[in-house]
Length: 149
Image 1 (tube, helix red, strand yellow):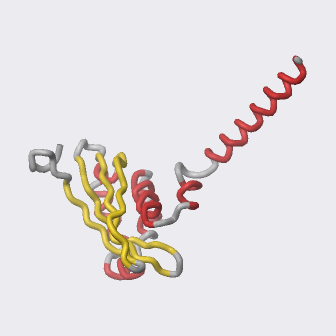
Image 2 (cartoon, helix red, strand yellow):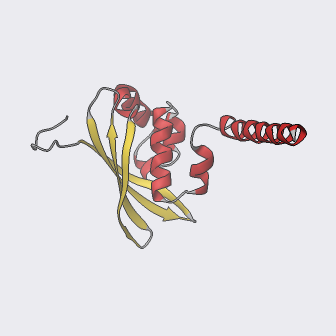
Image 3 (cartoon, helix red, strand yellow):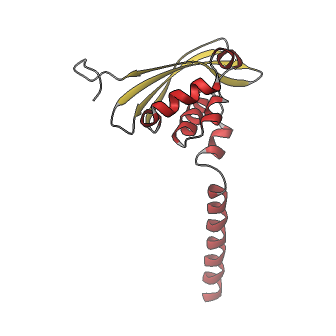
């Protein structure tokens, strides 16, 4: 009986160690979101990259059209200037509608400075991949209709 319990304990410890190694060797959430690269997954990956300070990774999720109209340097300056907004805790992602390779997704966030925001993403599908084609941020209205919290 002791030998069986010892074997079970050893096998459990090895399985736990392997699972931890799988989770730690990749950035947070990346393994899961690679499997769910739908529109909501792309939005989450974008916001996660911004939260980690990986501006280039966030920029790479924009469509070719968006990148042609908005330079990386300009995007980087916006992110650096409004750093606390992008260090946000995600509250909710809601797909709003999808029409033939184009969809909109809303993300509700609580920023590092305590402000609540709504980010509205428009995504397009190209070659089996979803890309952020447009992005609009606004302060979330409170219940009384004022801005902010």
